Length: 196
Image: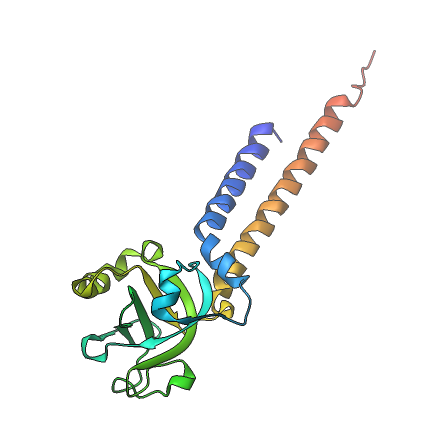
């Protein structure tokens, strides 16, 4: 075995692992959040205090049901609504007509009152697929945050598991490379037998 045959795959594995960990860093951080949400209270006051994003939080407020939007997602339809007086959108599972879930279950009540917990994103953390939704709500003023209701830290297990698996794979690749290099050094140090 030559040094290049050992070093190149190891380097590719370690770099690939680093890239994967970088891409999943937000999911890993959210997976490690406390299971009990931080209660930020009323939405307008909470947003004025510039809350930490990518966090498991609980908020309360009144949603503008008339301008809410139903959006199709892979996991099912969701309803997106702006909380009155705050640059904040809430995304809740859409179950039939608007406001069919009681507020105690983390959804929108029939009166538009929202009391729920979930993952709080800054708009800069959302992918480009969310851009049309943000443009739709910009007419009512800027939007700075989106609360995905019902998303708990347990929901980020895929990013955590994938990153953990990749990290373990990278460590194993480094161990393999170190053992191979040690064998190469040992062979290089071994006395060469000469026949007379």
